[in-house]
Image 1 (cartoon, rainbow over the protein chains, first blue to last red):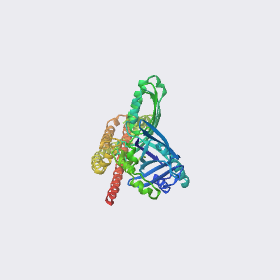
Image 2 (image 1 turned 45 degrees about the vertical axis):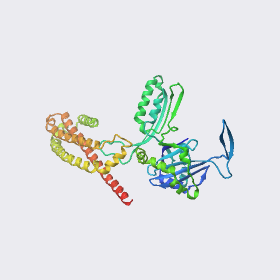
Image 3 (image 1 turned 120 degrees about the vertical axis):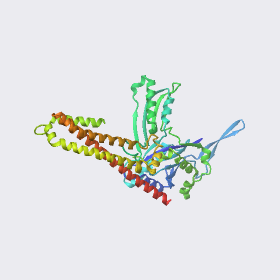
Image 4 (image 1 turned 90 degrees about the vertical axis):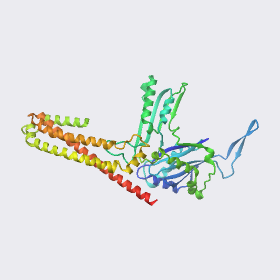
Length: 289
Length: 167
């Protein structure tokens, strides 16, 4: 099983800053709400955090090979213990962009976004604010174009893209802040009878917009005639992938030293290392307007 | 360019249509506007020619050619590899030359087309003047924006140097 790292972006509502929200989350470090524990701490240029999801199971199945056959038995957990999933993340409080680790069956990026958006509701109520927390997925170039190329026939395309880019201006130097690009497009069904034209147009479109795409759904038929849907939101760009065994070793977190443990964590160190790579660093640190 | 042509056409069309002045547009133009427009735009053309060289060299040295701007540009190219270093400055230079040429053509027009005794000729000469004035204001505005960008860059560089010094 692999652990994958995805990019995301948070946008807070009007009247507050991301730093204020992160400080609010920090004030509730280690507090369990709806079987979830969130903890954040400031760490170099980023805020490091972890989402701990407590599973509601008191027992689990264990599989053991025995010679030619196998045995499945029930293993009960000790009183007061539970199985948990851990999802580490980092976020840049200036730009709102960050990286999130996920492995199979742990909280997906969209779930993480919903949990934090829920916490934002409390933060908003306490501070008398309006608006909500938006979460977008960050992508690297070439992703959706690759998906579109894989389809033999494209029937429908819905795209929304959010990203950052610097535009060259006509008579002035490049701006200090990046431009945030948001565009939603829905494919026209009139071209249903010309599949080759559809695919060419869609691939051309993605080729031109690839660096800006964050959410897209492409519905079509693969080479075997089976209807296939590619959803970028469920298949976002992976910034890093490594084995679960490397992730889980020597991992201990307790509320007495949650913040110190986060700072010492190998997972956080890995995320920070990815965040410093060329291309990723510029994407995460690009302030957008 | 297209905007300038459209503006020029709109000016000429409006002047010909309304034919202002008590005794007609041409009389108004030849008695009140022809000489001042000639000398004024000749002066503007000469002034822009000297300003252009000075501004371009100064902006190239202090803004586009500065190490700090180059370093920032290198970082930004990770998100958009097509960013050019001196593209905006080159285009600004061309626009300033275009404005100078516009001013000289306007001055010349007062002494050539301006002597054709017809309201259309007068409208064309005034149209040239209005359009060139627009170009000159646009050029000055872009120079102002570049100077603002230069000061912002100096501020960012200063903050960066102070932050680096305290580490």
